[in-house]
Length: 297
Image (cartoon, rainbow, N blue to C red; front, top):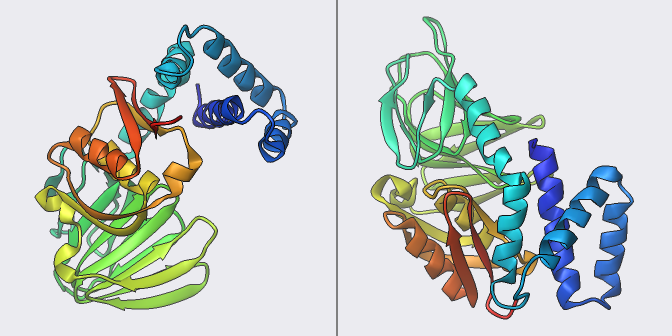
């Protein structure tokens, strides 16, 4: 099953579960009808969600977990292998469930977060890197050659500095620990210095906030310090350290904002802490996935 198919199936599950609890909600019904009108793939995915739900014997308690597992067994779990295989064929450096340090061909240092990957395109006259997934902390020595990092349509250029580049959900974030960084995207250019964090969302919106330079890439010391990230974004960072995939079954929960410090050395406990803050429940079902949803779901 391809990535787009998996996204369609996950969307069908979300719509079905929302309508199960609010069957007379006209807004959700309109969303469901618009989804089904897109084509046969959407209608097939929604039917699969309905059939899986009918197969559960206790729909209120444990039902969401059973539904997800049945759908995964029906084919969604195959996608979990497809993307890592694709990345593995492209990456020069990659990690599994723990961060790792390495030297680039240019001689510069990089630390990759868990489940991260990059392409090193450096040569005698250039220092070019492409981040494919996850997060990376670069420590760049000045030697006269620009050091370029690209991710999606964002390009970062430095001469000598230390900074983090991360892809989290639909955002690209560049955070400077030392020195200065130039970020270019959509024809715009921003100059950042130590303590600046630039975030670009998938709709092209840019924002710059201030952070403590000591809190840049805290995953290197087994912590995640956040102030304003969404539950979905925090879960995405934790997800790099767990088998399978984290699935959040409630959009309001996924979009809730978070502030705090999470222990990445114990990712499942970190996820449960995140859930408890927002009155949610976590079911772990390795190796396929871990499910989070509100306690009254």
